[in-house]
Length: 215
Length: 215
Image (tube, rainbow over all chains, first blue to last red):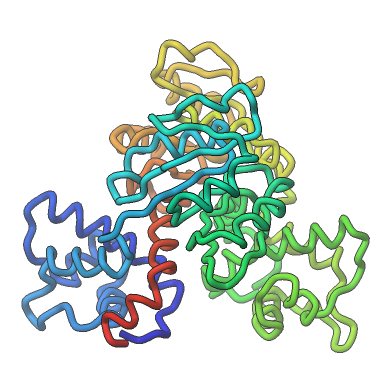
C-alpha cells in the first residue's frame, strides 16, 4: 500500500464502505466498477484508481467481490476495532451524538461525558454518565479512552486541549470551532458545520458569480 | 475566474474567510502568504495557488490586503446575500442548528421548521415556528425559501425529496444519511458525521495499517 494516499481518497473510503454494506444487505456478491459507478455517481475509472491504492481487488471481467472489498475497507478504516469515546460538552448537540445508534454499531462506544453544567452532572445520556469537567484529567489518567469528542464552545477548547495533550488519547473529533493545538501523536479531525453551509452557498451561486466576474 | 476550480479549493475558501475575519478583528491590514501559511498550516505556495484562481489579490513584496481579500472571498462564497432556510426534522439535532447563532450572523435565516411530532408542532425554536410536515408543499409554494435543511431520519428523505424537487428551492443541506435524488438545478450538500468519524479512525490507524499491509 502506498503511503501517499491522498486525503481525497481517504474521504471517499467511508462512502465505498457504506455502498458495499448496502450491497451486502441485498445479497449482491459481485459488482463491476461500472455498476458501482452508476450507484455512487463516481466515474468507473476513479473507482478503479481509488481502490488500486490498497492492492488489487478487482479481476478483469469479473468485477469486485463485494464481501472481500467490504471487509478490506473496513480494516483499512480501522473499523475492525472498538474505540472508547469520551465526550466533552454534553449539551443538546453532544447529547444528539451520544444518542445516535450508528456510532456504537461501528464500534465507537461512549464511556463518559463531561460538562460544567451542574444541572446535568450526575445524569445519564443513553446510559452514559455525565461527570464534572473538573474530573476530566483524572478520568483520562485512570481509564482507557481512544477518542475525545469535543462539543464545547470555542472559548473552552484551548484549556481542554492542554489537558488532552498530556493524556494517552489517540484522536480528537473536534466540533468546537476552535483550531486546537495538540502534539502530533494525537490526530485531530475538525468538523465545521458553518464551512459546509458556506460551501453550499458557493455552489448555489457558482454560475451567477462566474458571469459577474466574467470568467 | 476559471470555471474549473476544484472542490478542494472551494472547501478551503471558508477557512480562508474565517482566518481573514480573525485578522480583521485584530486590525491587521496586510498579511504575507508566508504569515498566513504559518497561521493556517497550509503551505504558502498552496495559498498563492488557491487565491490565484480568483484573480490577482497579492502584490509581490506587499502581501495581501486583508479587508479586500476578505470581502472578495465573502462575495465568492455568496455570503454578501441573505438566505431563507426551512428545516425539516425539528428534533434534538435540528433544534441545535436553529439555535446556533453563527448561521444568522452569516445571513442564513431560518423561516420555518417542519416535523411530524404532534408534541412540537405549533411550538417555536429560537422564535421560529414548527409546522406540521404535511404543510411543507404549500409552504414552499407560498413562501420564498432558498435552502432546505434536512435533518430527518434517512427513511423519510426520499418522500421529502420528491416534494422538494417540485419546489423553487436552490439547495439542500442534507444531514439525513440518505443519497437524495433531485433535479440538477437544486444543489445538494451532504453532511455525513459517521464518515468524518471513520476518517478519524483511518488516520489514527494509518501508520499501523501501513506496516501490516507492508506498504
